[in-house]
Image 1: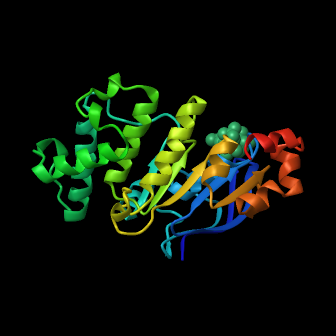
Image 2 (image 1 turned 90 degrees about the vertical axis):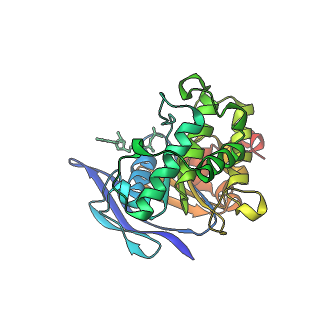
Image 3 (image 1 turned 180 degrees about the vertical axis):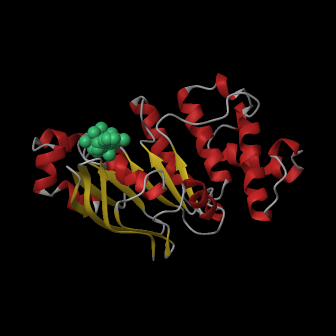
Length: 269
Ligand SMILES: Nc1ncnc2c1ncn2[C@@H]1O[C@H](COP(=O)(O)OP(=O)(O)OP(=O)(O)O)[C@@H](O)[C@H]1O
């Protein structure tokens, strides 16, 4: 079943049109990657999906509901989680403190409780859930570190735990491996594969279903290792949408993005 549907998405900045009628659906449980050269419109399309930017024409549906003009915080509440190129964590708190606040925020939203979060004393079950999430992203050993003392990679792990605390149905990841070494990138790929699984299978998806992931990413080995399907953009147009093999063998994609050198493709083979 489609969890996200984009129909006829157009977007302009002033007189300049940067998205030209994008149609695509994201299926539940898949890793859907958006790739393309610099300036192709990937980030703009991603923001239209998260609500950080609104389309000038077309519709965005999440779980069958029209969310085209719904702001990000309401989409988050409905199950759209989001991570950023530079991890957004709350520096004054510890790692576990960050996750506790996110869990309490979710519970408050569920209970429609307007008490300020700082009045909350976390329950034992909240602490347990926070630790479980930190374990899931391999950060339990640093639960009591101040967020500000964590490395770049660990901050990304923490941001992931914070986002998962909201129990999203779809996880929108903007370049999850940005600024990482090749070894760290591989770790992140393995982590994404693992956390997507339902909890019963050792993952962190809380509702028994596989989590859906949408990502923009420049590292082709990450994309080709993880993606179920890939959307390729060029100059605001969707030029291809298909499986890894279909995209790797698409002559237009090779010409505008992957390169025609066999060497380029061997690296990611
Ligand atoms: N806020 C903005 N105002 C005006 N033009 C913008 C704005 N944001 C993006 N653009 C333009 O829209 C086009 C698409 O940009 P976008 O950032 O979506 O591309 P991208 O594929 O994500 O690029 P990159 O890989 O470099 O991040 C570019 O020409 C860019 O200059």
